[in-house]
Image 1 (tube, rainbow, N blue to C red):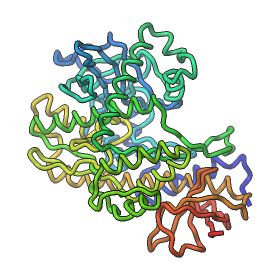
Image 2 (cartoon, helix red, strand yellow):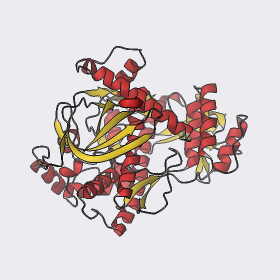
Image 3 (cartoon, rainbow, N blue to C red):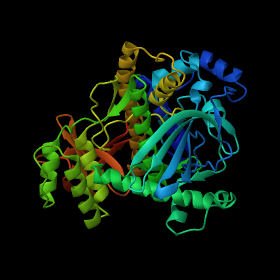
Image 4 (cartoon, rainbow, N blue to C red):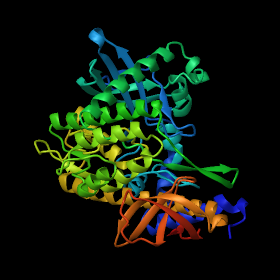
Length: 489
């Protein structure tokens, strides 16, 4: 039986807090960290002559509708010969959050903000992440700027990294910007209110699409999966809806991928180590090959990002509705990304899914600790100082960040499943079309489409593997544990 609906958010919040503690994540800030945050009353300032004043440019942010922890701004400057200079400003969080402070220790423990269906557990106190270290609209803020000259073919021909002062002219949202870019809606009011910003974003969109096309020609994978988000009516859980990609999200994604590559290369050139984000050779390539065979396609015996991308592109065009199911299967079979220390001169493992060799998370320091680590390394390089972290410390942080990212993902998934169990509690006995998303000695897992929910297959698992389509019957739910059980029908 489902709980009284008015208790939905409260119940999920209790589940989220318990899951955080069980996974070694801190749901609350220490008294020392809170005291440090209380003592910070204004954004960081720096009058160093090396800091450029770029506050006159048409900077804007594009993020989720309700996001307040704004990490990046972007702006474009057309150049001769079809090239465009793209500037990405990243919030200078290190200017406020000092290494080894109590706030930094909390961030170092959790390593990431955790976004659950009922509550967000920010990596930094909200006073900072949503205000004093956020690139908020109308606020002059210190930033690290990654400058890229992008040629007409979408390649980054030149790049630079430096500190600057920036000003966000408009806080924009993905969905409304995407609808405007697609011609399905008028310009959002905040966009229309800033003279010249409409043309600015059209230039950025054009460059981002060119960069995306080049990445995919080089083997970057088209992996559009369905990520459900909880929809509440007050405190009542109303639905789980897919959070789908759109043109505005792609714009930001492609600029951030490029900026992360420039960051890694800059640290390499300056002789400093970096904390890379890597995705090694797929763990279950043979199963990906078998999955392609069931769809009448052939992939090479050895892993090939280019061949896999061509296969995914064909399948997306052939069946866009079912493509997220295929993409989810491939994501599961590729395995998880991880953090690894890259020393100057070493061969990089690269990122198989993005088809890039150099990649270091750097563009979300309010939300991810690896990005704050990278920011401190960048600032050391810019000031010609020794690295902010020693080799052994970086190695330990790489392992810890990988583990905690996995723990955070498990917390988010657990609360999402508890939310799904709430929605499905009254539908025991119903039948659904499902996709097998996991198959191992630990169990077999399936996902249904509406609502987008994953659960365990408790009967009829024989002969099934990731990517198989089956029909299932809902047999039980357990909200407290986030269990949803199906049987093959």
